[in-house]
Structure formats: C-alpha cells, structure tokens
Figure 1 (cartoon, rainbow, N blue to C red):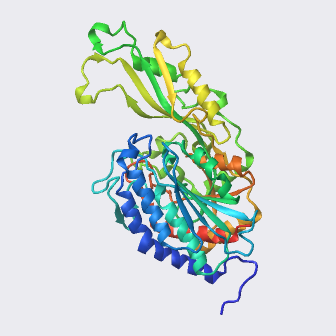
Figure 2: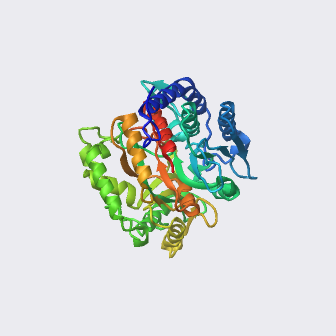
Amino acid sequence: MNPRDPSLPVQPHEARAIANFADQAWDDEIVPLLKTYIEVPAKSPLFDPHWQKNGYIEKVIRDAATWVESKAIPGLRLEVVRIEGRTPVIFFEVPATRAGGNAPGAGTICLYGHLDKQPEFTGWRSGLGPWTPKYIDGLLYGRGGADDGYAIYAAITAIMALDKQGIPRPRCVGIIESCEESGSVDLPAYIDVLRPRLGHVSLVVCLDSGAGNYDQLWLTTSLRGMVTGVLKVEILTEGIHSGDSSGLVPSSFRILRHVLDRLEDSKTGELLPQSFHCQIPADRVEEARATSKILGDLVWKRLPWACGADGAASLPTTTDPLNALLNRTWKPVLSVTGADGFPELGNAGNVLRPYTAFKLSLRLPPLVDGNEAAATLKTLLEDNAPYNAKVTFVADGQPGAMGTTGWSAPNLAPWLQSALETASQAHYGAPCGYIGQGGTIPLMSMLKAAFPAAQTMICGVLGPKSNAHGPNEFLHVPYGKKLTAAVAQVMAACQ
C-alpha cells in the first residue's frame, strides 16, 4: 500500500502508472492512428481551395472523432461543429471527476490541436515522403504527425490515464480545428459559437508547439504574430522580347526589389518600420538567457545548413545563443516563401516577363498588433509605385483579420510552476525549460482576450530537426509519450 502525500495531486507511483499507460497507448493505438493520418493529404484550405470536394479534411476529422467516441469515457460528449463554408471543428466535453468540479463557475481545462496540414514541399530523403509514413528508430516521418495530428490523441490519452488511476481532475473541453495552417481564419466564428459551452477556462493546454531539446519538458512562453500575403508588380499585359524592350520597359522584378527596400534592409535583414518592432519584456530576456545556457550552440547548429557542420558558423545571423533565441522569437523578420510569374528554368527564354509576384511571410514580435501591421504593410508597399507600375499587396485572411497578433504568456501561477517542474522531473528526470517560439498559434490571442485570467501550458513535440512544414518532418515518439504523461500530471494539479 502506497501512503498518499496530501501535498501532491499525483503520487510518485501514480506518475509511473500514468507513464506506463501513455507508453502503451502510443504503441498500441496512437502510432498506428498517426500512420493512417499521415497518408491523407489533408492540406489546409489556403493550399487546397477544393478541400470540401476533395474530402481529405473531412476524413481526418471523422477518423479522429470516431476514435474519441470509441473510448467511451464516462460523460463524454463530442460534436463535429459545422458552419456553412468553413472548415469543421471537433468539440468535446468530459465532466470533472473532482468533487465540485462540475458546479457552475468551476474551472475547466481547454485542450487544443489541429488536423489540417501544410503542403508537401520538396527535398524528402529517398524512401520518405509527405504522405508515406515511416517509423524508424522511434521517429515517425510524414507530414502533419508532429504538427500536430497527435494532439487530439494525446489529449484524450492524458484524460484516460488520470481516470484509469482514479486521480481527480477538472472538467475538460477540447477544440480541434482544421484551418490552423491557413491562419485559423475560420476559428473566430467557432469560438463565438462555442463560448457558452467552454465554461470558466482556468487552464489552456495547447499541443501545437516545440521543444528546445528532447531531454525535458518545455513550456512555450511567447509566440510571434504574422502577416502573410501576395505582393504583385505588373508592368506589361503580356511578355515581350527582352532584346526589343529591355532598357525601355523596367523589370517588374527590379521594381519589386525596390518596393521591398522600403520594408527591409537587404544587407542586415532589419525591418525598417519601427511599428513592426516592440520592447522585449525583461522577464522574457532573462528566460532566454537561462535557456541559452541549456541549449548553447544547439540553438543554431540544429538547422540543416547547406555547407555542412564544419562551415555552419559562417551562416547564421548570429552564433550567440541568447541573441539567436531573441532573434527567432521577438524580432520582426521577412521571408519570401513563394514566387509566381517565372517560367521554369528549362523554359526561360529571352522574354521580359509581364509581372512578378512574391508570397511574403512577415513574422511579428508577440506584442505587435497583427491587423494594424497588415494595414501598415499594404500602404507601405502599394503607395507611390515606381514607374507608376501596378503594385498590389493582398493579405491572406478576411476583413478585420488580415494579420495575426502574437502572444506572451501571463505570469505563471505558483501551482502551475510547481506542477510543471514536478511533471518534468517525474517523466524526463530534468527541470522544465522555458522558451519562446517563432511560430504563430492564432487561438492563443483569441483565448487571451476571452479568458484573460487563464493559465497556459503551450508545449509540443517539435524539437531539433523535426522540421515541421519542411521535408523529412518527424514526430519524436519517445518524447511524445513523456509529454502525454507530463500533460496528464499537470492537468491533475490544475486549480
């Protein structure tokens, strides 16, 4: 008989039982389910305009919902919520097992993930592919498994692990969307519909983030915002002989370069408009300083540099671990992620092209308003076009939501800080790490506005070289098992 320590929501022997439950669930169910999920090209609507007709999103939604319902958790209610013309959302509710946990005003844990995926991209190693799952030495390769098809399965497994051990927990609700990789443009409408059913959210558990290494639990403390869209420069109505016209007709590519010079210093990558910058809070700088001491050069050496390991030192913008962390989490940065108006090299004749279009991705510091930045960016790029060319910038998203605002975590409540440390030690044998992420999770700014007092546990399996969105994406299954157990333990401690 194991005596209970009343100060611990989860006893040491219960933590071991939770870990064993998670291990078995991943081996017996989650890995096979994710293999099936990876096979489905459930690309987000931004990358599959015919998503309704193709039915891939519908399939992964139904597969996940069917599995959750098959678990027969007492009191579980699940609904695939649908709004005409929008991607579906899975919403589930599980009543509390804690005394008084179902009373009005009692705290609720909101669990979040998504099932839509980024497109294929090129460069997959021989034998690997975006829709071809391969499980090799604990790594599950394929698009979407880590980002983050595993989330709904891990969330339900965490709930079941607690219930199996008879460990009391709060009421839980889940929101699993299918538009996150398109900027969650459909999600606000669903949040409005579901708000009365969410209850009093006291803890948000988001399983769509990353890890600094695979040796400890990592809590995400900030997320950047983002504006994406297409910048297009048109100078002709059709292509014409370059020998006949070059020197008279300005190059649309040169005009586009000139327009981008208003936004970015091409020598340094520095964004010029000061409104795209913000002061980094002192506590975030100190967190980054502590994390830089844990990770060291892994912050930049984890990336697949083209010149290889020996020459990598010449490639990063900085090799200082602290500056590297701050640059990728609190600095505004422009990336060109796609181009149009260019023939393939094999068909590139001596023709002056009529237009050039770039897909822009502007990452914003967590405290910069995304919608205001989108409006500023459009004006900056379009006004006073050189040579009176037709210059347009069309942001992704919808009116009133053309940009995504980032997020910075509230101060940790003592109970959550203690629970994170205890869970990390119990399941990883190391203290919890704290790290900002350079990506964007639109839900977090929405929930921050709706539930400003809620605590947050944003975490995930995207560690070094997992390469979400790119080729050779993988899910580190041993880490996923430990993360599932750690999340369950924190949920039990929720106040």
